[in-house]
Length: 420
Image (tube, rainbow, N blue to C red):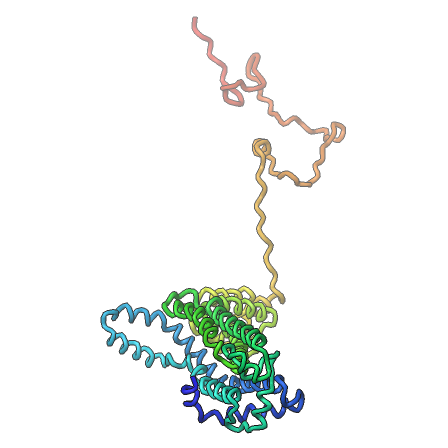
């Protein structure tokens, strides 16, 4: 490890200078020989490095999204040229060139951070060995060796012997307890960061080997941190734990505000955006306009979550534009011009079904009708009222007033006398 770290010695002096500058500030507050002064100097170094790496992190996100988009095409190339590895590599490079993506872009933040990590390890290892390095002179070296973080010296390791730990003014139990806790926290933060990426920010509609690789890394990386962590000084553990926490928070922010299309995080984001737009009638943030613009540009290629977002805007009387803005739809404008606020039409009620007795009597009224009915008594009936039954005119002798059953109504011809 010392040989690898020595390869990055060109950056050792700048890293040691930054630590000394932060130590001067925190030493004036907490004391120059305290663990707070040296520990916060390392944390501040991490924050400064990660802020400088934000442009690379943005490039990493774009490269990762582009690689996820190309996964179906890559799978087709692998299946088509599975017996010709050279042709397969040529087609892959051609695909990368046409799409403008670079697989190494997703590793840029890690590669850019590696020199600082090894330089810090080299500085802290020099402090543990009692050697001046970079701009750290004898006075600063003695101050750093006295610094303890929760009882563990800044340069102590989990694998150090009791004599070496005693020379740094601490006990072996304190050093191992503190380093074990920090290693567990470091591995847990790495596992949670990777799991958050796999469960929330991955397109679930496309199943590719890339997802299986990411799932394997979710379990491999924490184990690697645990194995290598026992050989790291306490100061390096502080550096790496701070880096993992920063990465976890940075990724949570990205997943919340710029999720991967087709993922669960995108469904939650578009649901929040729909509620916000329907309440305020517009989009304010530039990032939100960029996402809406991308959704509109896709057209029929939208996924399920994006179609649901567009339909939700339509139901609210809004329409997304190609520039990412949202305006009132034409139907909404016409409705407001005609009658102000739109009113919903009353629901059509199904008529109640009549009973058998009501159908036979021919009464059109339904059960529950409250129309009042009036009846006239005999004294109130008009004088010229006649019974409804018609009287048949009498015919000849003994004509009947009512038609017999089976006979036609009205006057009938008399039967001729039968001949005897």
